[in-house]
Amino acid sequence: MKRNWLTMREIPAIERLLGVALNQPDLGSFSRELIVDKLRAVVNEARDKIRQDQLIDISADSLVDSVKNELTALGSCSLRKVVNATGVVLHTNLGRAPLGKRAIGMVNEMMSGYSTLEYSVATGERGSRYAHVVDKLCALTGAEDAIIVNNNAAAVLLVLSVLAKDREVIVSRGQLVEIGGSFRIPDVLKQSGARLVEVGTTNKTHLSDFQQAITEQTAVILKVHTSNYRIVGFTAQPEDKALVALAHQNGIPLVEDLGSGTFRKIKVNGWQEPTVSECLAAGIDIVTFSGDKLLGAGQAGIIAGKKQYIERMKKHPLMRALRIDKLSLAALAGTLIDYLLGRGLDIPVQRMLNRPADELREQANELADLLQPLAAYGWRIEVVPLLSQAGGGTLPEVEFESFGVSIVTPKHSAAFVEEALRTHCIPIIVRIQAARVLLDVRCLAAEDMAIIETACTRVAKGVMP
Image (cartoon, rainbow, N blue to C red; front, side, top):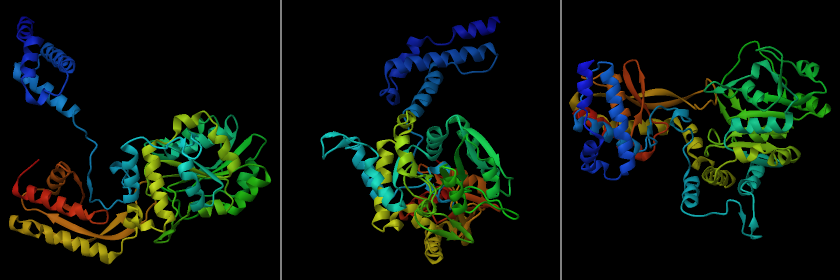
């Protein structure tokens, strides 16, 4: 105990540590108050370690270095650009859909000053933020009206809160999905105040199951599109038109959570993704879908359908809590304009999903040529066929033929190279398969090629980040 007491006395005083810290050029931008707070925290941590008989360097330089490292981290942003060489187009961890040039331009314009977010130039009075995109959404989908919130989970929550609070919602057992991050449809439904009524079985639900479950307490029939999973084999779900007819005969709205909504037809390897307009044309009253998945815009939850229901949602108190912000709204507006002008392939997600094999092979060859000089360091560079995925909880089990580059090095494992590329100043995210580093070119922009060349050259030469 005596040894620890004497060691604690040897911890430099805060004033002495502050004097050392203020002489550090790296700390000159931080306030004196913040530096003092961090110094006190470091000193308290040192005391705790001494009490636990842990070895610790309590020199002034060491303690100040700890504060400098923490403040340097606070003063930088870990949210930054990465190169996506995984081949997963809508990589949730990498921010899902990258924006097109028109959307980026509109976001930049909204960031640089004030805007007409909720102002009508025509009348000089307050306007609606949704007016900037509603007409565009209706023209693209055939909806009577639309409204936008911050994501699709919020869209489902708002719809059920408005239409089904304290009443029953009928859902097929085969559609009680987990959206992601343990976020489940039954949880959203419960939060809305509605009561879940499950019908059918995991693999088969018939129209009669819905019919028998309808009571005076039924407020909504909810259909959940299997956007992130498949049930195959001995399966059955009612056709949309039959379910629409049943709902309308009983005066009940039919709502579909489409998840990853698309405006363009996508048919790959036997899987066909329904478009928003097809769902609405079938008579579904309300459709909800994401903005940052197959649509290719920023994060948003879009609610489209019958005006009589949308009008009620606009007046609900949750709307203010869930509403979309101006930057996401600008990104959505720019993306919708591309669709309206027939420029769908200007939207990165649509372009990436529709890249032809010859184009991908050519780009893989270009990348291999750039990396070929690394053969002098023993690197084996090879163009290989790969399989890409849409990702983001879309197009389940669908794989796209792609091409990429395989890297094998004599001195380092694939895990070592993967980490080195991941911790590059511009992180490069790759795949590892069969002890090889794989760079799928499907999502690579032209400027990404030089970034990869520079990073791999540094790794080969042993110049680590």
